Image (tube, rainbow over all chains, first blue to last red; front, top):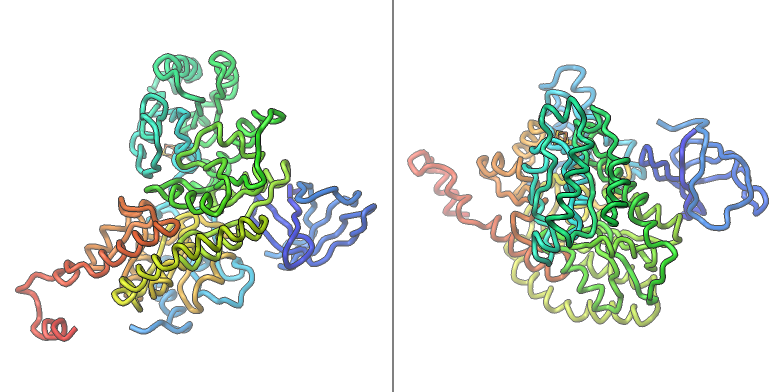
Amino acid sequence: MANIMIQRGSKTEYVFYLPKRDLEDDIISMEFNTPEKWGGEIKLNNGGCYYIEPQAAPARLPISLRAKRLDAAE
Amino acid sequence: MSALTREETEALIQEVLEVYPEKAKKDREKHLAVNDQSIEQSKKCITSNRKSLPGVMTIRGCAYAGSKGVVWGPIKDMIHISHGPVGCGQYSRAGRRNYYVGTTGVNTFGTMNFTSDFQEKDIVFGGDKKLAKLITEIEQLFPLNKGISVQSECPIGLIGDDIEAVSKKAAKEIDKPVVPVRCEGFRGVSQSLGHHIANDAIRDWVLPRREGKPFEGTPYDVAVIGDYNIGGDAWSSRILLEEMGLRVVAQWSGDGTIAEMEKTPYVKVNLIHCYRSMNYIARHMEEKYNIPWMEYNFFGPTKVAESLRAIAALFDDKIKEGAERVIAKYQPLMQAVIDKYKPRLQGKRVMLYVGGLRPRHVIGAYEDLGMEVVGTGYEFGHNDDYDRTIKDMGNATLLYDDVTGFEFEEFVKKVKPDLVGSGIKEKFIFQKMGVPFRQMHSWDYSGPYHGYDGFAIFARDMDMTLNNPCWGKMQAPWLKKPEAEAEQKAA
Ligand code: SF4
């Protein structure tokens, strides 16, 4: 599990930020993206893949979350 | 000499790597790259923020330097204790030329060195008592200080002192903020982690202090984040923002005060100059206080105008007009500077190797003068810095991360730039090689270089260095070959 931050992006809806690695990348897809259910598997532009516990969509961004790494592009 | 092609640059990197043992070669290879603008993500071509190889000459600093020297040090009305042996603080004292207004020793303390001067006995029995005593003494001798920060040097972490407990207790006693910072030099691979630790300390110990207190804000409040006022940089930036109608509430941290920092959560936008050292706190404020942040670049008129417009776009028409007015006002002045110096500097090639933001930020200023940056690199940059650099640099230019003394020398010998911009540790090597050199950390005791006023000084300094007659006198007259002389006359 890693601490991550999700922000609004300019090119894509969300941007992913992993402070530990200074990894800042666009999120190209998110499994659930509705007000009630938000999160799940997220895919990054660099090919990486993370998982955040599905939850109600946050009232505002950015937000710090815990995420599980499914597949990091390295 | 014309620009190198991609193949030539690649060959050059291989040639320089040749001398290393197999393992070192493999490691260093990842830190050297040929720029390719089509790459979106820097980590495909360059590795950064890794431990330097033992045995090579690196010019990185330590976490303590990042916290005390960069982030905390310039906060002028606080006293920053270099907690540990005397050397770390004394040898770095006042070296960064963070200018400030105030009476040193009375209400400001920027150039002074406070240290707990650890002796053997403190290492053996612990230094907590000494720290408590020191804080009491400081309070007696310098009653106008607005707070104290405890900047840990290496031994503090090693012997396991509890500076947090001492600080909490002392803060109650003197009724001022006392901030323990765990920035022991051995943490992390460079000063970069020190910046992060310092940001976290501000987040935990400074920002919450004013929460919920009244603040008379305006819709035009901004904070300048990550400008350390080196040679007056923050001042020449601030006046532009004020001229366009914004109110600068806080300067982080050059010529800044702790009161300003505490008020920052009330501003409308955080403007970040040095992204590397202060993006952490900006991201935190965005999340916690809902304050957007943006990066700007105040080097060279093109970038200044671009940045002023981008900043104004976040505000209403009044500010947008203000920005245009400021740009129009300085435009003729800047044109005069360019007209004067561009003919003397046109086509010259520069190699840079600096710290946090300058390896990419100053490129625009050089381009304004018709010069070209042919190589650049960061001492302690991370992936996100290189992400931002790739687009600013030309194709097939050199990128080098945490470059070693040897590599940098070889690169300069082969690429033959007309000017090298780096720090004091490189300065004399290159000057003795006969390559004009400017210090791009401390502006060679000149400055400011930010903003419009700064550009005029920047242009003059570059001309002064590059076209200095001394470069033609590098060889003793009796060693001069006749044909070289003829060549010089022709030139
Ligand atoms: S590495 Fe440790 S001993 Fe050296 S300057 Fe930094 S804090 Fe001081």
